[in-house]
Image (tube, rainbow, N blue to C red; front, side, top):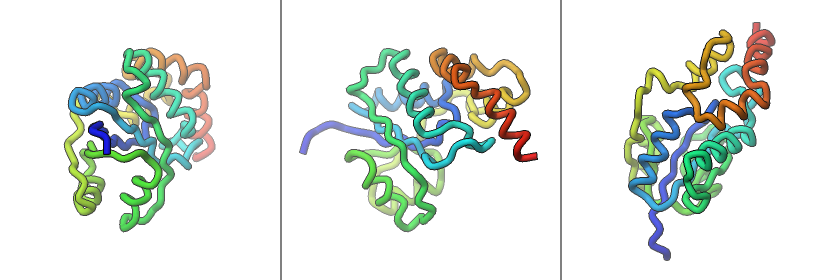
Length: 175
């Protein structure tokens, strides 16, 4: 077995923002590689999940390359929901490479991985009230400034795929 210390970091990344980037850079200070599991991969074109798994993978890849993080340091893997907590950890583990530690602040995620005897560490957070995907989506809907909350490459990509317009259309559909 190799001696690579690899972390698992799970999120929806709807969208990927500067708080996610901060967490990833901090985690990479502690491990050799990071697996970024793009959760709820089957969901898209909803107000709370507007971006496809492929779009989220692209956002993350662009942001990490913008930050000069070598592609040899990260894996980005879409993970669809299984909606069964009893098998969730084994479901995730079947879809991603081997990992030695999980980073999460979600109480249920922590409990499920600890029950499977996987070490769990807290995600380093920065300005949590400022860096919130929910807040960013709301700013897009309201036509307010949001670009400063995401890496530059992510803002450019979201504009290219007309993310704010998509969110507004999705909101109109739900009304």
